[in-house]
Image 1 (tube, rainbow, N blue to C red):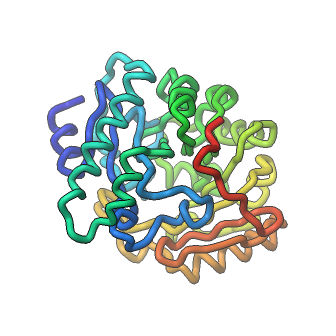
Image 2: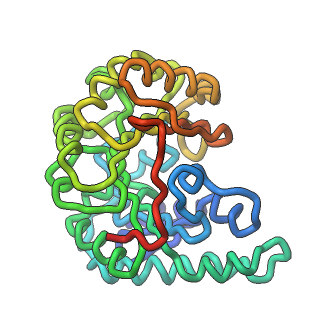
Length: 308
């Protein structure tokens, strides 16, 4: 990668793995190690925040979403692809380096620190579009072979890849109710609206837990919940997450703070979506401004030994 991009991401806390992958400690890993709270994925699904590796197998992306906190304006040069084994080995090594720094802090929960040395989950969601990595299915299998669960987050632009991967839980981001809003909000390199719809239709046939994630931006896509409901109906996902855009990172250069909806607005949208879709609100986390919905208003936790 270019020296400018490398220096910028390193300053942001990225730890690089091989030629194109990266790991970054999230806020909630820090809080969990200090017994100061856990992320909403822990509350919803049972994931241990301090045992979670937040990673990506590529920094490339075919969307340039204006709400993204990553530096989407910077070009990622082409490169050769590392093997899944190299990436997983490197991610675990980088994670051990990240958590080792907590050993001397008086606020660290030492029992949790010991658990953190044995990660049980990989969130394939740090940056970029993971389905651009050609060996994604093998990468997921490599994590599972080490008794780790996986969450894969994708923008849905590569349905042919989604048909062949088996993460513990698959997220597809749906950030627009129609093509016009999609073009404005996701700022795609190419118009992939048709492929996103193909991915939605594919989800109902997959034998894995599925989630549609809707990130709401005030004044842009926080509208027409009934249109979102019609799109979600194609996918028949196990869960739907309705989440506020958060005014963080590089998105602050593109959007004003007022573009971040309040939790009450997210809840109101979720209720309207529920009325239009038949889904029911199962849970919510105010600090993260996120609402979880399911068909029956319930959620099944993921076991620490649920790797497939």
